[in-house]
Each structure stands twice: as structure tokens, then as C-alpha cells.
Length: 403
Image (cartoon, rainbow, N blue to C red; front, top):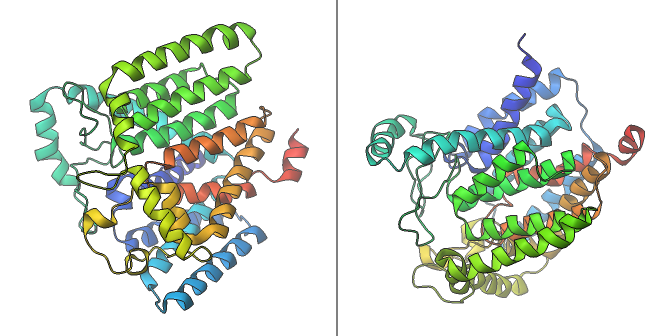
């Protein structure tokens, strides 16, 4: 028998992810998200969910920040401000409608994405097959609402994006999954991996193996390094002494060997640690520029509007930023930055309590999310906003009753 409730929940969580990283959805005009907002809103009211006081405080804080930026820069970027509130509503209504199962369904959707992507990834080595999908099938999925930008729109069929470039790889292609590029896919997969470790208390299970295989096929430098860190940290927390004192050294030796001998890992990291780049600002160069901007506007930040964020600069190379952590700091200021990531930590901490796993996992998970955000602009995405709202799903008193 079809479980309509479960199917509905999966679709809600999928849309939360899609509007965070699937080009067909997240690159579209904000009007598209406003239309789709009706879906979680209707489910929210049908299931008679209540609006939390926490969310009202959250909205009030956002409004205060926006008013502060408006008074500081004498500008009211209506569409930019509206866009943030639409994403907030989308995130909140979705997680409230679905409830605690949101994190479990998120893991399932990412596992499904890996399985689908592997089909297209493997067959992309057949030139005729990839060419057929890029030139014949992908144009059927063009979204007329996608806004023009400085970045290329890669061929996409919603479930898979044909963007295998980067990392200096010649013989190996990279797996972008449904997201805008391989590095972005690895970040979403690593969050799913963290969630599933917390949910199951295990590293070695079927879903985690699929997620880690997905990260491997992205050939993302940061993704692979962070995944190795997740494995090592899990083994450190593991009470099995054999795993702790035998497996960890093996993992470290393999990791160092690969780092020194695989070009797209070692040499790329050295290159990205440079503060200069012939094409775009590197992650470290972005961080340097962002800190300089932050010092000028530490309280309310510079906002997300391009006219204030980049103070009138329009050159694509000059305004390019790929460090999501420092970018967030500059846009919203120090206070909002600290609150944002504290709420994210609180979500994961309460998840650890609810699933009865080592609470140290929470701080490590936050560090992991910061690390993946060091190379991608994640934190303005609706899914990552939802992570700051999820404390309402894992309330202290309810966790106590459950346990």
C-alpha cells in the first residue's frame, strides 16, 4: 500500500535540497521558490503544526539586521531581502511539516542521488552517450526562469549535472551528481554522512559506504580530505582498541602517501594556499579580502546585495568569492555569524542527545561543516539555513522524554 505521508515528506526534503544546489531550482528567479513554497505551507497547515516562538525571534533578528544594513548603506534591496525571508520560510515550514525524520530522509535522498549519479558518471566515459545527453536530452530541461550570471550553466537533466571539469585530471572524470559542480556534491554528501553516523552510531554500513563512494567519485580535494578526517575522528571515538590503534595509523599512512603522490590532491592544496591566482581569487585570497572587508563593517556586515557587498565593483574576477565561511562573516557581521553557527551546533548537539551518541560528535560535525564551507558558498542556501532552525525539532524537554 502506498504511504502518501512518507512520499510527501520525501518530496518536501528533496525540494529543500533542490533549492539549495540543483541548478534547475536554485538558479531560478525567486518567484519559482515562492510558488513552490505553497507545497510545504499546505502540508504544514494540514498537519496542524504550530509556529514556534523561536522562529518569531529568529525572524525578528533577521529583520533587525536588515534594517541595520539599510540604515548603514541607505539602500533597500527589496528582492535580496525578500529572497532571504522566502528561504527562511521554506526551510522552516519544510522541517516543521516533516519533523525529526527530516535528517533521515535527507540521508536517503543523498544516497539515491549517488546511485543515480553513478549510472550517468560511469556511462559518461562513453563519449557518444554523454554527448547525446548533453546536446539532446539536457536542453529539454532548460529552465527559462534561470537568471543570467557570471557562471556557466552546465547541461543538466535535474538528476545529474554534466560538469566533470576541474582538479587538473586528464583521464578521470568527476561526478557532480545533481548539484552545480563536484565539490558542491561532496559537501552535501559529507553532511549526509555525518547525519547517518549520528543516526546509526556506525560508520561501516550500507548507506555510509554509498555516500563515501559518492565523495570518492567527485575527486574533490577538500571533500576527500574532510572525509578522511571524519573516518579518523570516528575511529578515535570508537571504543574498539584494535580499530583505534591499528586502523588509524593505516589510514594516516595511506592518506599521506596519496597526498604526496596524487597530483590533484597535494599540488592543488599547495596552489590553493597561495594568495594569488591567474583566473580567480583562491579560497585563501578570498578569506584575506573578506577579513579586510569585515573589519570595515563588523557589526551589521555588508549585506548580500552586490552594490553593498562589493561596493559597486562588477568585474567577475574581482568579486569572485569561493570561501563560504568568510563570505558569510562579511555579509552578516560578527554577531549574526556567531549566532548562525551556534544554532547549527545546537541542532547537531541535540541530535546527538536524541540518538544517544557521543556529544563530542557535535563539535566535530560543526568543524566539518565549516571545513566544507571553506571552499563553497553553502551557508546562504536554504538547506543550511534549515540546520540553524532544527533546534525546534529536537527540543530539550522532548529529548528527555524520549530517553
